[in-house]
Image (cartoon, rainbow over all chains, first blue to last red):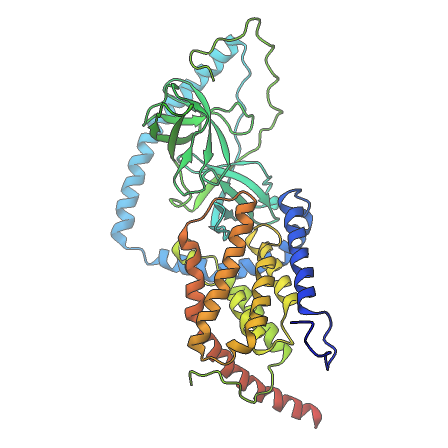
Length: 299
Length: 177
């Protein structure tokens, strides 16, 4: 096509195919630099300073409409909600009294055992601005950023349990990757028997996978999973998920286990950003004298 | 009224093109969630296609590439994903341009559907190559809605282009006086 074309009458710059090659080559180069080597975070942040105010501007009408909607909430609904909250408050107060007693007892017992005391948690309250626009990833954007002391890696929870982890921080907003995002891992422990495992996001909303669990692992549908805390990042004891399905097929080495996350950002607007651990992770225990015997499973 | 036969119109000013593209960027930044987010068409891609077809000397591969980069940052996705998709989509639009111009807006919408779909497929392939999960067939729905929007968008831009020209003329007249 190009060979047969007459010489251009007007000066037009490079041939279209050459331009195509240049621009798609540049795009591919950027992709590899970003996706493989993560070189471009500074560049991204520089551009984000320009884009973020625009995003805020476009958020304003949506938030305003939500506020206006809130204003016209029916009286009856408010009343019943208030009654519910009062009831909940009463129950929680009772539990709290117990909790303080237990905490004191726990400190004492840990002291007796010579165990490392648990650190105190600081939390930052944040509000979900909107869910991330990338259809390939499960992310939300919240209204607290590096100006408020948020750092990448911090754990995000709501009033029920873990919902994700801060992955990218701008001055005023930060991006939270949900635990249901593909390959997002959370170390968990089964409440029923203390079995430790790691759950991974499946990329679908409301589904977590627990791969690499032995065929004979003692896991049942309905088991509560909480964070184990052994990674030194997630504080221990936060609810993560409930096992919803366990498929054991003799043809495979591992059981296929699906879980349902306990918490979810689609239920609330407010979330808690838990502080990063103040201290370094606890020192590694000395190696045991004799190899620990696992109760189950040759791999 | 539904025909886009090449009429003898003077081109829109560069400023107007820029304005529409900024508006498109803002529309893309609307914080939708749930189903609306999936169905919301890529306004930047639509506007790029319009200007590539109607004003190829103003908007070409370079503009598409740069706006794609902006979209990548705005969405917080892989750098270059939108840039590559827009570049290839615009290149195809440039090849098909003489043919597309012959059709009415509704017939053009079919082409636009195909071009938007191609841009989505390119983004899908790049993301899958970098290890993302398939987001489900609804992912492609936005191209359909974009195509449905095309006739009204073309009409609107056509009209505002005329109006804009009149304002431009008065402005230049004033300046020339």
